[in-house]
Image 1 (tube, rainbow, N blue to C red):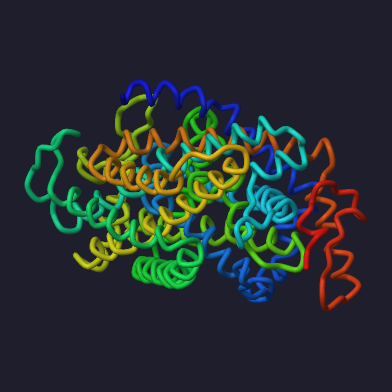
Image 2 (cartoon, rainbow, N blue to C red):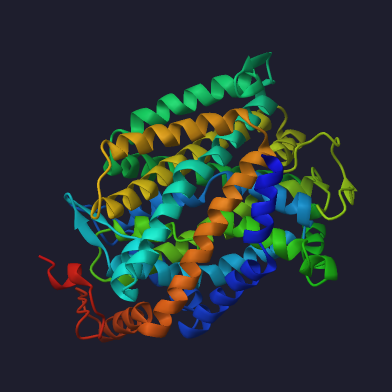
Length: 492
């Protein structure tokens, strides 16, 4: 299984995808005149400018839902993997892909708003919707929807539950070994997996509004607590901070960084974390109640900053400033840097847990386990919402009896499977899901640029209204030459 997964990943995550993600981010940054920097203050203002309605959630709730998908295992175990396989300079490339990717996030999330629909009393939207309506390619929309259901319903959930289980094992001990049909597993991972499945089932059977209300409280609180803990660790080791920046910037353009090292792992884990270009963000963006599509595009662009520049950087600084990491490039299989025991799992939360333990004692390992539980758990909720949205899209063409119940059971089964399997297998399956969605979404939005540039037209319209000082924004797609944006034409 591990060999099959590895072979698939070597094809999906070829250098072509790495450079495509960076290139598209730069392309849209230039076309939007670096909207992610120019309109930063507007992003902050918009966070609290819209309110929840009967059909949609507020901008802040949409941010929380999308952040719940972005802020997860990738921010803790993913950063550790980037450093462990790509070296400290991988952190720089995580920053680069976040800054450039925020422009991509703006484009895809604005598209999600433009082409959203009302489905059974709530807003729905995402790449499948805008590929059908803007590209006029229903088959491509179907392919994306099916790939997304597989990715978020089967492949990605196991990464989150696996990290929770491994963090719990480091914090509280592995416990005794239990033999299951899936293989031998330690009792801590088994118990953790059962708890996650039960709590997840209670929430996902409650619907999108319950997910939004849960995440809008949990995500901001845990993110702030995590960043505060990182600041404490940095303050206690402040004299070493210049050395950390030296480590990060030392090898960013070395040959090893270019081919399979820092660039590869920085971009790969950066995209896994912030999801810019993957096509997940537009689902939450479309659910928001806003006056103009560009407004939610800006809010979603800001979420990339929160994820990578804040939370991922917090993890990276904690690991590097305490020296609690190993570096073992996959191409060589030998340690370049070894500060921890060789048995330490690189693609796990262990680096972060040891970093905190070295500074604040045993509490640090427990804190990371608790933080990771909430981060990863809310990511699981976001995955379910994204998969449900794509099931709703396909349901317009054909129905499967009890399809949503089947989806929920499938997701819960994937969560349990991931909690008891190895980290390398869980991450390998997750990488397939991310890469598959990224290829389909990036190619699709590039084609959308060729055929009509709807997101860029929406940005120009929003900026003109903003410059005119309007109090209530409006969006008229026909005036802008945007076709099939039926929601905005028929809006109450």
